Length: 217
Image 1: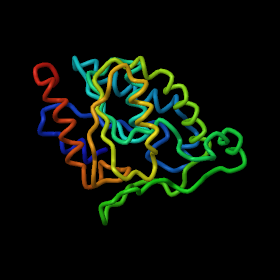
Image 2: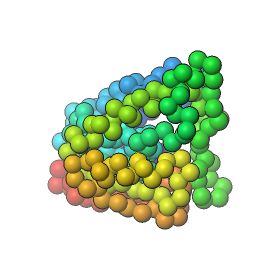
Image 3: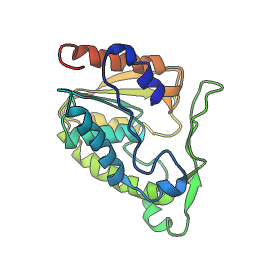
């Protein structure tokens, strides 16, 4: 998310890129955290911005996209922009993760789903199953709360996503209280903020910021 944030510096907006609890280190650190911890990190970052700014635009990718909607439930963002948001753990083993994690500690990383050659996502090489189990449970609750999101929503969707299946977008369209705006990322895969359509995402964020030019600084 950092390159996206840096591309918005000239807008005059205050931009925050919070590091979620347990993230940014090893998979062993990540396995000691879960959905509620990650949501608390997002809420803390939102509240810090909202303390000094009248309106906050929230942008999230993948699981961060899901957290964007959690913020829409818990707080009152001006706009949500979600990039390939994950509303499900798209694996046939996902329902079994609460039973599996004491015996299977990690699985292979899902990082690196990028179309653009030479671009590397800085992701761990393993994913802790305990964290996936927590995500699975958190997303189940979030899906039932989507109707509480009361702000404009833009969803940026990659044409070829090797991580998030189309059912996440179908759920958003059916459960949000108002229809989201869809932005097609025709040349990108899952990690679209590092892919060919990074500028398309930046334009969507700029449009949201410009809509609040009179009150968002």
